[in-house]
Amino acid sequence: MNLLDRPSQTPDPSDDCTTLEAARLLGMSVRSVQLMVDRGELQAWKTPGGHRRIARSSLEQLRATAGRPFTPPGLASAAPRTTAPPRVLLIDDSIHFQKLVSLLMRQRFPEVELHLADDGIAGLALYGQLRPQVLIVDILLPGIDGATLITSLRSHAQFAHSHLAVVTSLDETQRAPYAFALDQLPVIHKPRLVTELPELLMQWLPERVPAPTDAAMT
Image (cartoon, rainbow, N blue to C red; front, side, top):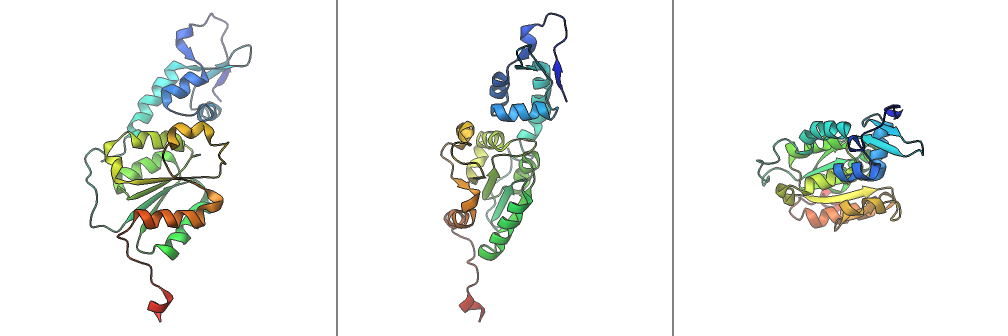
C-alpha cells in the first residue's frame, strides 16, 4: 500500500494535495480517489491528524498514463454505423448482472448485439471500437469508476450518436456524490432493471427487428 507516514523533513505544501483537490483534478468522486489510494494506485501519506495527503507527482503520472484510455481508439474519426445490427455495450463488473442483461437481451432483443466489459478502461476501448447505439454503465467500476468514464465520454462530440443509461445498486442518497456525472441521464436501480431497461431500449432502438412472437412461431 502506498499510504505512508510522512518523512521527518519539512514538507513542501506544493508537492501534495488533499483528497478533495485530487478528486477535482481527476474528475472523480472523493470516494473513488480514496479507493485508488487503498489499492496503491496513488502515492499518499497521512498527517499527524490522520488526514490523507496525495503526492502531486503520482497524480500527474496517473493522468499521463490514464489519459490515453480516456480517449477510446478511433473515437475522433469513426463515423456512426448505419447498416450493422444495433449494438449495446454493457460495462459492469458484476457477473450476475452481466448474465441477467444477456438473458434479457436474448429474450426481448435477439437482433441486438450485446457486448460486455468488466471495467471502465476495457469499456472505453470497446466503445471506441464498436460505436454502440446504446451504452449501459454501472457507477461503481474497477479501473476507472463509472462517473469518470461517463464524464470523459460526454466530453466528446461523437458521443452524441450513442444513448447512455446508468445502472446502479446504489439508492438515491448513496449516489448523491455522483450527481455531477448523472445529470439528465436515465438511472436504473438494479432491482428494477428487468422492467425499466427494456422500456428504454424500445425507445432508443426504434428500427430494431421485433422479437418473434408465439403466434409467429407456430
